[in-house]
Amino acid sequence: MADIAIHSRLRRSPYYEATVAEGVTSFIPYNDMLLPLGYGNPEAEYRNLVDNVSMWDVAGERQIQLLGPDAADLAQVLSARDLSKAKVGQGKYVPVCDHGGSVINDPIALKIADDCFWLSIADSDVGMWARCVAAERGMNVEVSEPDVSPLAVQGPNAEDVVASIFGDWIRKLRFFWFSDAEIAGIPLKIARSGWSKQGGFELYLMDGSRGSDLWNIVREAGEPWDIGIGYPNPSERMESGLLSWGGDCDRQTNPFEVRLGDYVDLDVPDDVIGIAALRRIAAEGPKRHQLGIVLEGDQPRPGHMKWHDVAINGDKVGDMTCGTWSYKLERNIGFGLLSVDAQIGQEVDVQLDGETVGAKLTDIPFTVEDR
Image 1 (cartoon, rainbow, N blue to C red):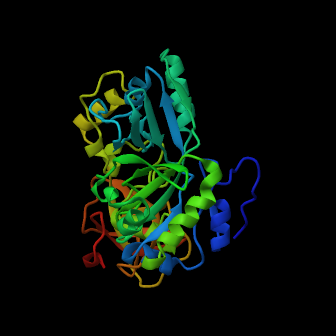
Image 2 (spheres, rainbow, N blue to C red):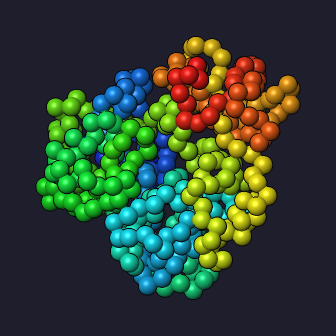
């Protein structure tokens, strides 16, 4: 595997030195930042997450700040979900769509103040999109990327670890809500959130010079629980049914095709970008849907499989957008973006590097009964 060259176009996160000291073995570029992608033992890193507790550098999950008198209006114009009742200290998962209704990002929108929102984004330039929209509409709002870098603590024991640092008040923090905190002079916002279904928190570091300090505090606090070092785990995220924007979507994917329909409010104002198209798609019904795929064979396939043809009786019905080895099912699994004619329980063929592999379609999330 070729190395990723570190240069001025790829930024190091505040936790970079700490991850190198921990033995990180690979990175990927994410929002122009190096995102750690493993420490040499994928199964152990998976087990840490699902059985215990794991900490991750997710500083690549950048924040786009909307600040000013029109911040709330801009946040709503960008979001297909109703934000009018959002309270300070609350986050909401929102599809951001283009004018045709295609998903161009799926951030968490955090209401910092009445005149300030953060969009905690996946890997795309939402900042440029927001600046262009604000300028075109003459909005009084400043769009910027603040000095904010999340550190994730995830897993069944994550709450105990974070409570041991900040106090038991965090146990009452509701899902997607956040609150201010400080430790050793390090300013933070703590959110009950994270890119896993195992439960946990994201610590939004607000001083990039203190990344190693925060890392070491969490690392030491987690020792009684044998905290592990990890990363956004592909096996756990697929088993759990978490969408990876940019990997599981193409340029025409709308929210209804990838299980985001519950996060679209069709009665938002008419000036919300994409809402007219989304209303039309909802009325007509989507042409594709996302299903699980369980491949035949009980041996892991190398690499992170993605975008392979899926066929039924020789006719292509869509694509397998991603794939990985599932430690829970002991099978290779993936997500399919498929015609609505393809249904759960059907047998399909997947083209993998010139090889035809049999598979079956399942619901998402996956269960051990899918083996």
